[in-house]
Amino acid sequence: VNYKKHITNYSNYPIELSNPIKLNKKQAMKLEISLHASKLNNVAGAFKGTSDPYAVITHIATTPGSKPNVLGKTEIVKNSVSPNWVKVIEVEYEFGTPFKVAVQIYDEVRKGENKSMGSATFDIGEVLGARGNSKARKLKQGGTIFCHVAKAQGSGLLRLGLSATKLTNTEGFMRKSDPFFELSNKRDGAGGLTWDNVHRSEVVKDNLSPKWKDAIVSLSVLNQADLSKPVLISVFDNESDGNHVLMGSVETSVKALQGLEGSTLTLKKKGKSTGTLNVQKVEVAGLETVTAKMANVSVSTPSSSTFVPSASSGGGSSFADYIAGGCELNVGVAIDFTGSNGDPRQAGTLHHLPPGGGFTDYEKAIKAIVGVLAKYDVDQKYPVWGFGAKYGGVVRHCFQCGSSEEANGVQGILDAYRQTFKSGLIMSGPTVFTEVLQTAAAKATSAQEAARAQGKQAYTVLLILTDGSVTDPAATAQILKQIRNAPLSVVIVGVGSADFSSMQFLDDASSGDIDIAQFVSFNQHSSNSVALSSETLHEIPDQLVGYFQRNGIQPLASVVRGDDEIVVEAAEEEIDLTLDFSDDGEIVVAAGGDDFASGFGS
Image 1 (tube, rainbow, N blue to C red):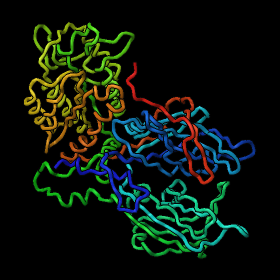
Image 2 (tube, rainbow, N blue to C red; image 1 turned 45 degrees about the vertical axis):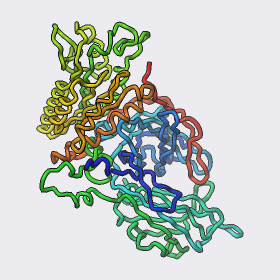
Image 3 (cartoon, rainbow, N blue to C red; image 1 turned 180 degrees about the vertical axis):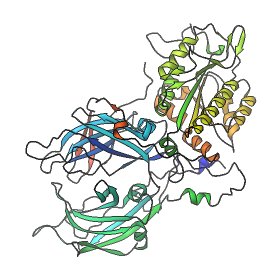
Image 4 (cartoon, rainbow, N blue to C red; image 1 turned 90 degrees about the vertical axis):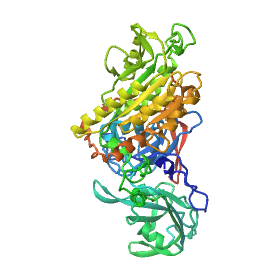
């Protein structure tokens, strides 16, 4: 059984359907974004005290056809220029796909337009890959914003249908309240336990017996998937100035609500009954845990069907856990220098450098793929190997590219690639990268053993770029089986227009067994670097988790860094993003918020 085929993602819960929840199969990591700031510029104005800041997080559109959308906002921290916001914003992140967010900070103004206190952008992949999963940036208006990413605790969704009856009117004569409800969880904030709003319903106008649309709430945000944890349901009368009036509240839990479906709760305010809350629907989905899955698996003998938690699993160890514990992602690059690439001096061949400072397809693939992996590599040192060329009349199937054993950064890889054409090689053949696989596997194993001796962890990704199918698929498949227990993922990108159909052996080599290899044709994504990196790298989180879990290696304790240990990046220009704030609290993107990254550059 291939465990990856049994992983589901609960993000696309059908909001408007009354049928049981339907789930899609796209894998993603559920992460939580938390924010805090220090020494913000006080914009409250003279004799008006200190600003009351809150932050809005917007997902920036990075590919044509996508649209920016507001992910959520934090709570308001009263009278502070160094707010530590408690509320987290949950996102789903797919490894290899850019995920940029804009953080805009505002001072809440009760009567009037909220004032901007600054903005910054963060790449979620970069934050996750940074030590301590944290990054910081100066703000042009003053102060520093800190962004931290962590795995969302628990999984699943709650669908809650509520209505109310005979609410106590908080409006004056001849008027009725405009009720909405909020769901809050209890968190341990800087000032002690506090209720943190995680969901707000729509407003029902002029109605003391409202029926609201079903609420769809992530359980990891609501209660860390612990159904017994307290939940506060509060009903407010909506006011246009934002000073909403409490109509009543009741403390309960998801577990208690499940037993009350079809029954009622009493809302209270200052100890007095203020109306009835009708619990009409309580549906929970996607709460299966790794423990439950493991219950039906025999662990007496090793088996290829043994369940290994997915990198996106709500429970158990995940890719985010290993990265949070400081697991180092190392990268190696191997490049095809066989004669079938053509004479690099002739235009139109695969290694020919385009005039005017352009890049070959080999270089475009390196920039796109290693550019993503580099976010998780602290030392930025990469071995670069070549194969398929003659030196001194002898065909070499694994040789060093460049003058150094390891290249420095992505640009160093490109430099090593270009230096190789000045090294006296003769492009030859056949296409054999078994030696590259063995070399990379040995290096990966050595790196993990050295890391473990120091109480650390290491995993390696090998990127192979080739213009044709391997000469001996059977021998290559055999080597892949031999190195399958190494801490290694192999990513092969086919460059050019050759027939790569015979590369199907990669799937056959791992069918029903440990999967460490992935093949992708560059030409299928030649106009979109995002699609290339996403398609190429999406299996790596599961492969990393699979390796460590098979070997009984659990994630290390999360690395914690104080603010003074985080490198603060320079302020950037204010992002072109305009938000529209409605009276009912909804925030939408009015303009801007685009940062397309679909091409490969010149």
